[in-house]
Amino acid sequence: MSPFISVARHATRRPAPPVLAVLLAATVLLASFAMPAFGLSPTKLISEALSTAKKADKEAKKADKDAKNSTVGTSRLQDGAVTVGKIAAGAVGNGQLADNSVGVNDIVAGSVGSGALASGAVTSEKLASGAVGSTQLATGGVTSTNLAAEAVTSSKLASGSVGSSQIVPRSVSIEDLSGTNTDTTFELPEVDANTCGTAEVPDAGAAITDFPMISFPGPTNLPLQLSATALRVDIAGSVRVKFCNGTSVDAAAVPNVNIEVVTLR
Image (tube, rainbow, N blue to C red):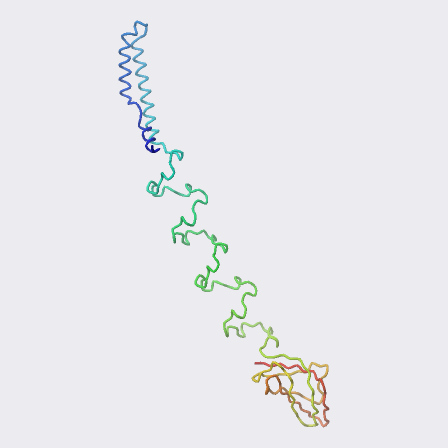
């Protein structure tokens, strides 16, 4: 038998007060003829009967009121007895939900919008890998403070994106320039007085379109009466250098002259 039916019958099943009063009155009336023989007063019996009837009627009304206001406890409900159609709109609020009772499968797709999220509720741990792409980022939303140190490499820079305004003054050295930087030695040929000559200085990385520069760091250097000028790269891997003797004294050949060759391209 359904618990709802049982509760309903229990709530309405009570003696009708007028019938009870009539029965009591009839009993008292019959007894009034017999009671004097036992020394009992009919008036007293009638008074007590009426008092009992009123009390019974009062208790019956209270029971009826309690039955209307009573709720059905969970112990009286069968599993699955309460369906969606039995729940009034708005009857279930936060207070009726057990902790962690609402899962992902209970949420309608698209029902949780930005307005339903608390400020700062979505952290990096809540985001799936690859969930944030360029379309999710506001224009200008990523600033230098959002970038990890050394996060931007050369492969991330567009061609021509770095100009002189992006370079710190005096931060570019010879090693940072495209081209070569070679320390080597060569055989300086004899240079007669008041004449010039050329020699090829090896530079393995030099390309024909490079612009060469030279210096002599020592310890073996040019004779004092000579000057040297880097001319060009005629042959890949070799820089042509011009040597001039502006004095009246011949300059002898010097083996193993130290030279530094730098080319720009």
